[in-house]
Length: 493
Image 1 (cartoon, rainbow, N blue to C red):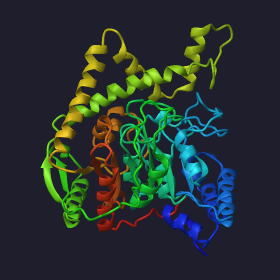
Image 2 (image 1 turned 180 degrees about the horizontal axis):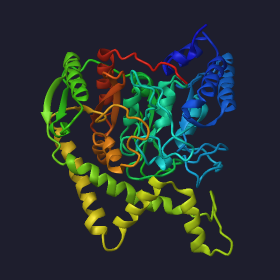
Image 3 (image 1 turned 180 degrees about the vertical axis):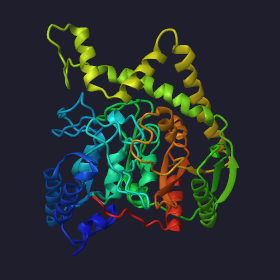
């Protein structure tokens, strides 16, 4: 019998279209896999009926000879940040627990229109604030990976940790993620899967719970570059309901994939060689350079001189925008309301937010409110925006010398849950390689490269020019073909 959980997005779609098996058979097997993996805590809400209904429609359309969509018959996981009509969409927070939107996010609707079905809502760091999936109100997600010789539970990364864990554990062939400072790429890297953050504005933000509006961007997470290209094609497109949406045609990224990089130049940023970098991360980076040379590319050094300022600038801008965005959660209109007896309006605000927001969310709201306050706005927020402009200019200058940039995705492999919980600065440093591309709004992806000596995945990151997702995907395919990464976690759950 075919093990559908081992099949990728394209293989499932093509098999359904050819009549090799039905979409319902695929959905049933994946529903069972999700139910059996409760110990990973990757899903907050299971929606087996949604997956089956979508599968039945695909099977009926095929029987009727109708044209099938690019995601037809593919059951996916949906990050809990996306509004899904009639299904709890809580952003993994207590303050939105029980909230069932009367509308569908643009991205999720595009996926349903393309023939995908939803297995459930995936766990995540609360309001996408975190790098380890330990800030979720619904409990942490456990990575399906283990260190060799250790039974310690590892992080699946964050904030899209439920997405990365579910795809790596073969609970679904693909999942949606969102990336504000690396929240697609970092979890993809440390769970051995592929994920791409497209150019800011490629995918609509309408119906996605906002963290930092000038940074948030949706993207796909899957087990191959081609699967990501197919799913991104279904997700992307102009949306008049999103004022930041780019009005540009969506290329056939999957159809145009080409691993021949002859005539292309790959830039290696000098500033990404940080002190104390994990030797195995650095070795995988060197190997990645050689793989791209083998694909025909020329490799050159480039400089991104303001890289060291990117992370501090990000942790001013993102909390500032979060402070503004999360002000809407006050207990008045929807979500949690904590109304102590005899309390006034201000007391209700305070009680609701105190009970509804987790510690990390409160920390970032406080930081954001501080840097936006009258006495500090120019000293912090205005300066951070100037740094952001300099970071963007660094990339544009670098791209005069190269077509794509290669760097590590993360400074370390997966760490154990609890290792960095009491050290926010150490946790924030997980995003040191991913934040610059987010500040610049550039397309960037992580591709699995190798396993380290502990048997844990290491990823390589590719950053491209604005709107050049194709260049990033092509370079990713070149690495994927040469890395030959087929490792997957041994089932323990």
